[in-house]
Image (tube, rainbow, N blue to C red; front, side):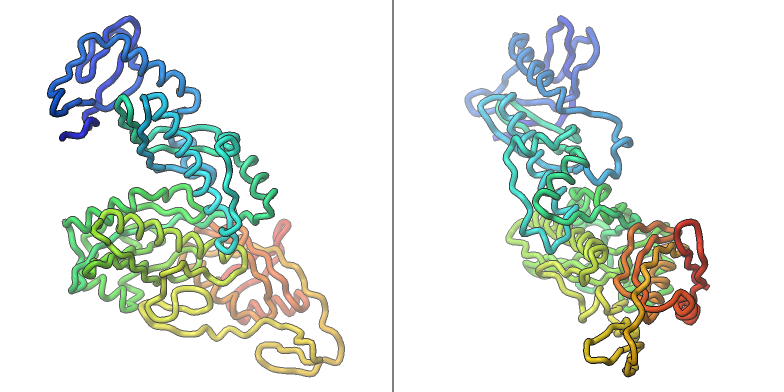
Length: 462
């Protein structure tokens, strides 16, 4: 039996006109764009609506009832807001069209709230996220947008976006004692690639479509570590991809320059009944090299969608963990190809090496002070740590990664936190166990100038 919900958009018109699916008599402004419905069944082969005034008055009334909450403003005005959640899919059946849409709106608002909470709260606190009633969720909602929708007399299918009150959400999460990490990373470019068993990129296949659709279903723009999905460039052939995965920095930077931004390659491969993915490149935290396997279980599209969601969640958790000072998060089921891909390990192209950063000075309580790996007897207590507010200036993601790596090698710096990040600079704070003169010398030894600025110090790499 053919689905009762078709795919052909038409427009509903009002103002004292008869309204028909599939054609209309133009006599007023359009009310709403909606899909065509073809009602076909074994006992009802052709249902042509000829006396539809009462039926469509009912549908139009439903649309008008929900118009206050289904605000469709200019998408550009809300683009990128942390407190917007897009691409929330709903598929609801109820006794009538009004009930189906009302139930779908409530479902989308509840789903979006959980997505937003997980977006703002560090991963180590996700097990304490609140489960809210419908009324509590509705009190946080400031608007609902419709990306796409289809409906019949009893069924409503849509992709919706929900906007939430920033103040309301923050107040709610704080009332549960939950930390909020809402500083944002610079946007990266995310390139989905599908390879065959030989490692050659595929151009057109069911797998390519599933992987692309999977990423298109993820809300990339409103995340704390946002991403822009890009298409595979012709310059990425099997040889160049192999060079990149084997650690050829020049090959990676060539592709990154062609695409025009910081880049993570999302590679997918079907291995029997397993959908295997690998994230490779660099984000705002550090180099990325993570592997994820998802069972297909007879549904390739669902597996690809789940893999894309989990891969993107891994990138979010890396950023949030860095902001909260925790070790780089590794989502359940993910692993680096060797033992790298984040934290204190540098893993690019499978080459794993431990940075030779000297440990930060600390008093170990036994009268000995460990400074730069050299144990010395302290005759008197060390001076209190200075709290430093500074701005690090650099150019591009690679410049930030280099600067961050150098800062990790400066002895005496403790509790380094990144408060904001842009392609040209980062606002940071840290404690330094020593005088400002000593800090200036230590930074100079690691390639930084250190100068006073307006309300903060300025670090420049040279």
